[in-house]
Length: 135
Image (cartoon, rainbow, N blue to C red; front, side, top):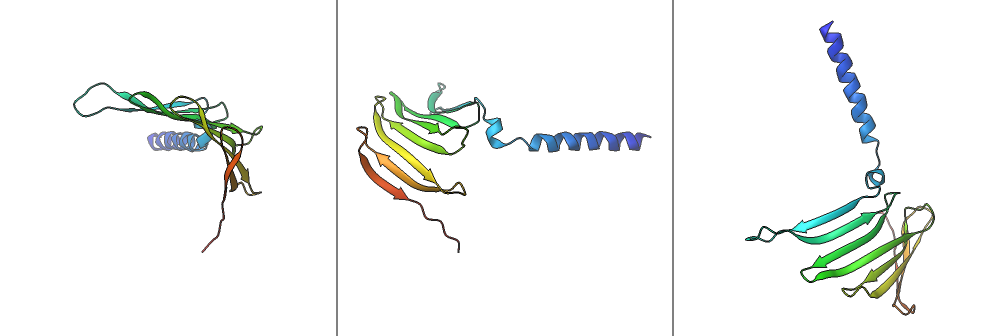
């Protein structure tokens, strides 16, 4: 009797564990804000170093890096409709002015194929091409 109850409890715990493992990475990041803090040796006051924000779909929407004077740089990420792939990334400097705009293209398998780098005035500065090969 005790043995069958123990087995029943173990099976129910195993089922709960399996259900918890099916949660995807993006589901765990829905509406999440991650703040990274640094504390220098000899001080007790933590200083904000990095902040990453995710939307309701678990996609990264903003990333900010800080320095002792405040914002060091910031990037925002844009997506097309329900896609998980970044379509456009806008980079800002410490004065919150646009420094570069990146636009991405992907192949049918979801791999990044091209990156177009634009200046703040909208003129194309450079293009990066991604090539995938197997050994």
